[in-house]
Length: 133
Image 1 (cartoon, one colour):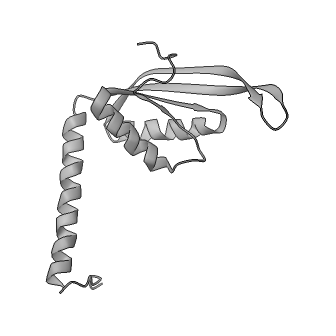
Image 2 (tube, one colour):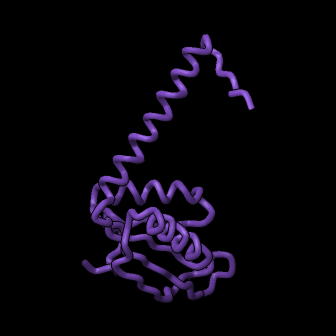
């Protein structure tokens, strides 16, 4: 697989201004379920966000790093109308052996919590009450 290919189905282009961090974490998980690997890419100030996303996924045991590539790209500064260079990072992540098991356990835990909340509402006569301290 050529990491330099643009607009791949398993590529996520990360911005540090458009979406919250965990939007990208969850999107990467969904991409991993479909494609077995995901490429995170970012320019300039968003590079720190991409590294953080990769670290969250790695620290949760979901992915391994397959490749990291850095480069500089030429762009046009829209406000000044002149060419500029931006740093770029691309991180290719692959599923760990227990990715599917971890995702299934997380989904089961989510449903268990939802069932507990529903039971609390039903038992509480339709009104949620904070548990006593």
